[in-house]
Image 1: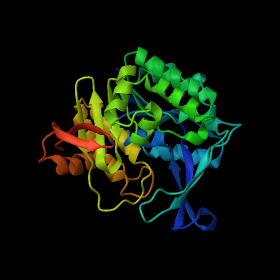
Image 2: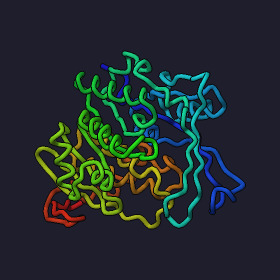
Image 3: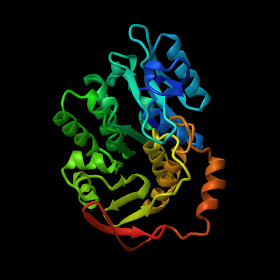
Image 4: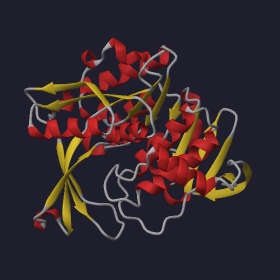
Length: 339
């Protein structure tokens, strides 16, 4: 039996977060953290007790050492993080917003060490993992990283492992919107569980209704699709079932970055624990709501103890999500959960 529960891959950047609000040009003090959607999910799953292997590259520099040290403290298996002596660790600046709006982010990642990931980065031991989580970010970094994404997803699916995919669109990293749509949909066709946001799904498929977006990916070979609807919750559809699970109300939104990564943590963890898809969406909504109440990209992701105490307390008196009525979102009509 594999010692690796989950394999995740991509780029972790150093992140300099503003201490004061306002335009980044006028901010004088920053503090250092890490950032990266793929590693956010990896960290979240590690906090829930899964053995997570992280495949990446960092530069032979202080930021690279900081990234690896931080990931190790979070419990990730970093034996497959290569140190690149020729290319630097990517980094970003992030503004501080106290009104709940999306922060300003400036990236410095072109030509980074992680952009030089390639199929040669894959070792045979990684392919024994029970599950692979992938996003649309690594394939946007470079042609070699894109080739590695296809290779990993293809080989893991052929080996009978489960594969999840979050499009996580980054249009500025692609040569054109058409190329992005084509390549992301090709990758989604290799996944069992596809997790787009509503706006992403509309752009990628050309459909407005969540049910039609989900059907598009089911027709490509996915077993299930969950579509994030922001504060409203999420719509899910499998080959046998569909439904809506309401969002979790929050008193205030502190930082929206990382909410989708928290959603992925909830989905993947619950499904690997053999929960129903509706129950997985319920957990995903809760972790996503927790993420937006904390400053930072992954600081709000819960530990297993926090999940056991806080999540179970919040939903202990409620039945598992079931389809019981209809609910309008956008232009479509689909089932609403009792959750």
